[in-house]
Image 1 (spheres, rainbow, N blue to C red):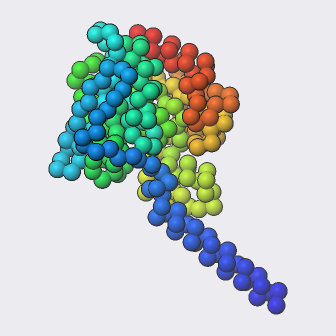
Image 2 (cartoon, one colour; image 1 turned 180 degrees about the horizontal axis):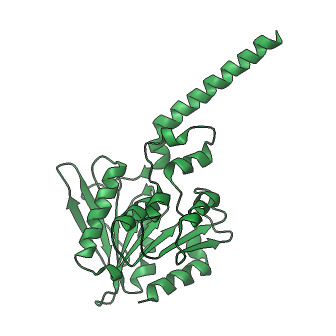
Image 3 (cartoon, helix red, strand yellow; image 1 turned 90 degrees about the vertical axis):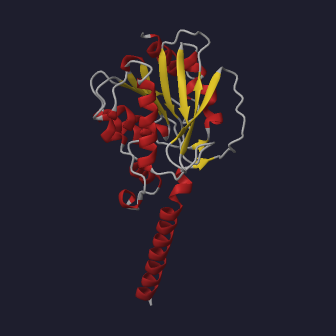
Length: 270
């Protein structure tokens, strides 16, 4: 009797484990991305000067990008800003002012399926499109005037671009070690390395970045746990920085003087 009860509970546990695992696998795209599409006729309205451009890649893939412009006609350089996994450029436009007031242009693209950008979204395609944006920047600015900035999900794309190209600096806000390791933080009992369709190994990319890296992360981050990002410390070069913001969450680092003062100092370096 007792033995049959044990087997019954074991069967239930196995069924639950497999059912949840299957659901996680097939729903991972929904967990990872929360885009908001915009029609091609949508009119952007921002409180700073900007220019909208569309970059066609083929019949189905078009990358929509906004160039936020500083008030001064003399430009210090450009910040290539790779945003997070929610909505579209309109959600992140408010952060452009942190850079434009220092004389930098801010080029902010939407990933496929976000905003006005079209086409199927894949890891490879996001890398390729990010590289195309960097090439455009490099045709206008010298390497020491290009900053790569990644926020949340965008830290992975930014790190890849930084590893493949020469720029002034890489800045990461709330990064992750890799997508499988991040999933593992939420579902540690599953083989996330094999289940994850997206890999984005930030830890590997950082090893190939041969110029300064600055990382910001809050200790109270409930989206990308601090312990996950902290694993990147062992990858960093002696000149790199990992800046811990006590009590900082995933969404409020910009409210801390520590973040603002450090970012300002980096942008004033030139």
